[in-house]
Amino acid sequence: MSKDVYIAGAAMTAFGRNGISMQDLAQTAVVGALKDSETPIEKIEAIYASNVYGGMVLGQVLMRDLGITGPALYNVENACASGATAVHLACQALKLGMYETVVVFGVEALTQLGGGTIPLQRNDYKTELYAAQGMTLPTVYAMRGTRYLHERGETAEILARVAVKNRANGVLNPYAQQRTAVSLEEVLQSRAVAEPLTLLQCCPSMVDGAAAVILTTKKPTRHSKAVKVLASAIQSGHQELGCDDILDAEITARTAGRAYEEAGVDPRDVNMVELHDAFTIAELLYYEALQLAKPGEGAALLRDGQTALGGRVPVNPSGGLLAKGHPLGATGVAQMVEVVWQLQGRADGRQIENATIGLTQCTGGGIAGVDHAASAVHILGV
Image 1: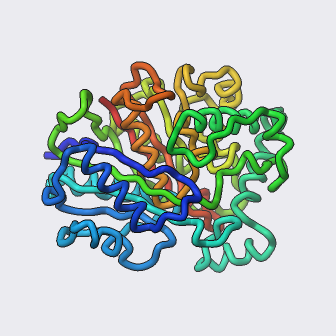
Image 2 (image 1 turned 180 degrees about the vertical axis):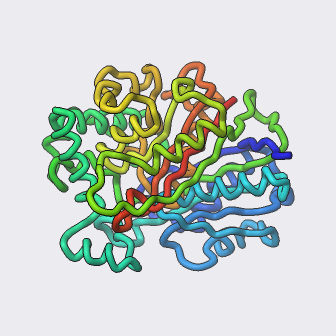
Image 3 (image 1 turned 60 degrees about the vertical axis):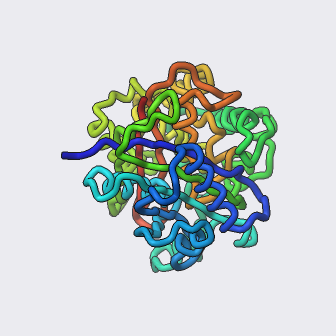
């Protein structure tokens, strides 16, 4: 019989260019989650560590000085979806009864890369060919943005609205890297990156941070509301041969469908969403892939204020990747930390009233001929 899985504790570090070592980042997040759940170290039966650029056996290196040694430790890499994938794997083991209590953490120190855009996949010969012709992640999303504006009859202002909303939310989040509100004009007039995307429409690429959660099959009593993992879904991307619709976020739609079915939740029941807004156009596409809006109606959802704080389904109340930052290995876990805080009424300054169901969505990996390499959707509830 499958067991229920709960998030007993959640913690994260502030995201930013803070010059803190990966050891200190990871240990701060893990200790915070242990303290938040009142879980003694000796109760941890397994550790799931997510990271992209840290190297071999990173989890063991980071946990050694905390004294959490001995239990099974799984190092997980799945590009931007690494953290969400680590949570998914932990949920599987817990549901099967392999463990009762585990810790999942994600960490990244991107400032160590020295600046610039995140490198594309290096071991894919097709991606190397594309990169030689100037293909980067910003240019991929810029093409999607251009096509979106053309097909939907919109102007660049609709893209800028995403940045304005999420950066306003970031002002309210003490853990966000960028905490400055911006106007539509400031977004549109910021430095061009890849038309129609400007600098303020792209998530910061140089950011350090960590996040951690304690997952358990024992219903926690530490906080007033116990947060349960209602669904955990992961999918990989289909190879797309010939012409494909670059506005069709197929992998996310497919993963979300599996998650809604597993949770027994209708998309209209979702009270808040943390999604992968690495670029402004991504949020608009994911509105429809997650069934928050009907096909072609994502722009109206944003324009009507339904995804703002106080709207029908606030999206990225944390500030999202655009404002909070995107330390790859930590992102998926940090999304869940925000949802836990929101569902338990602990998101001071940006609290969503009466939220009972939250969803996180994270994609990862840019490889040739595939929408994304991975997509993860989790649904949490109280």
